[in-house]
Amino acid sequence: MTVTSSPHLSPAVAPGTKTFRSSCEKEKGTEVAKRGRSKPVRRRDKKGTGGSSRRKPCPYCRDKIEQVDYKDVPTLRKFISEKGKIRSRRITGACRRHQAQIARAVKRARELALLPYVNEGGRDDHPRRERGDRDRDR
Image (cartoon, rainbow, N blue to C red; front, side, top):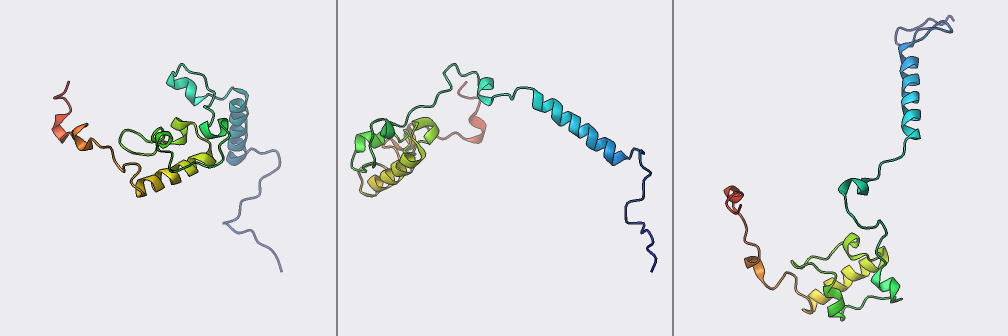
């Protein structure tokens, strides 16, 4: 049985002959090598924040508190925004484990009416704007 070349298979190329594919692969390789040599750009440098890049320590780990207490309302209020939302780890500086406990404690405290679900002022603090009202305040 003889093997015939199919038009769908890649054609036989003489050794030493450049193909389009091999030249593209070489170019990509050089581009990657060039990119790898430069220093990576840090995103925080672009924002222009003047502070240090050091993370806040977790308030519970710092004080060596194992469990977040849902009855400690003054402490839990620090982790809630003015609107009543639970603040993120990035803002509070809490570690992952304690942030999950904070969220659970805030939800329990809300359920027992120790903390509000929303702020007490209601919508009067920030009146909602209509579509065309953007330039009227300026």
